Length: 512
Image 1 (cartoon, rainbow, N blue to C red):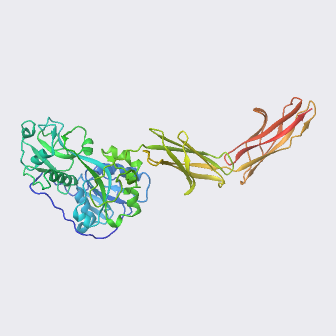
Image 2: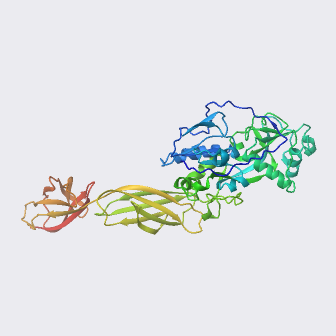
Image 3: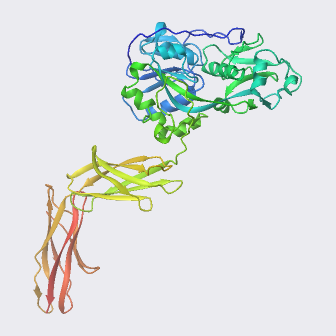
């Protein structure tokens, strides 16, 4: 999707005193497992940025794109190196929240980039440029040490101990209750949202004073376990969710835990567009029940929407501190329908959940509301729509949870052939002489359709079938068996077909 307004410039302040361990990658075409699998076009929504949420956004992109939307979601990983191909050509792969957001405004503004993944709140420059942040998931930052090799670190680190490690006051694990070993403190690369969030935590623990990093602090790629997993002295801040995707290569420390929201950041000019709201808004895909499982598969937890007391999809220009989670009970809705009466359809919505759902069902067809507030009885809502046009018709049902309940809504659709009416006429004699059998004609006519009735008609006395015959051009001649003496109330029955409902006609024969 393209916009395109040039906004104010970006000021990126990198912390000093650290040594870079990340090796440069040639600017050649590259593919990361979290890259989108297609080349986006101008109508698509294209995102780059944070390594933290790249896997989540790849899963969400696959889920969203499977719905065949007007604007597909394309997300390029921070890792992998090389160039990425955009609608207007290739650019060097942006690595990290800051690098992604830098392409949304100022001198770096790139019309092909529509959103940036971010694991930290906005900077002053980003706010001044009008960028808007959509929170969608909760992540927790922890400290990680080697899980492949016995680490010299203690099992737990306090915030004060972490400050002392990163400012160089503490240099050996034995000083904080661990085994003898020179500490190797690591920090994500400049521009990383995790780095920005981590240093803000250090500053808060240091009485609000920014921590000057010791010369021993080395830069590594955000959430890359290469420099940590085999080194007994290494330590690095790590997303708990991202660490979970790596298996058991890391040991996560207790003590320090810092919750943060994950965001998708857009230009202010794009805030109200259908594509942005349809994906990132509080009623959009990322805040829906369909996205919840995908977010959890990536190691995070979905935030609740404002309707449930949370902040998911609520655009903001400040760091989100409302971490209310979507803990609603998911529901599924199965919709079935039939046409047992002329010009009518009976719809049955079955709503299921881990506990009995509470709420009502709304039925619609072709955008027209047929009924609202239909109550659930044993999880089922039934409604019969009448006066409908004949032929195949689509219907939808929506489960509306009871106000204040813990349930999520759900929807389903079905198609029903709305059938025409029919009428049965008979020409049997009213009296039959002794020893004789009655013979008559049964005619079936259909209303509102040009076709004629086919199939067979049956003559019944109560539940007993006396005779049957096939219809030809809507008519059948039926010969009855000899009846016992006396008066008999009979019925001529046609069972209906794919375009018309069945009908019957009662008649009386007196056998002499």
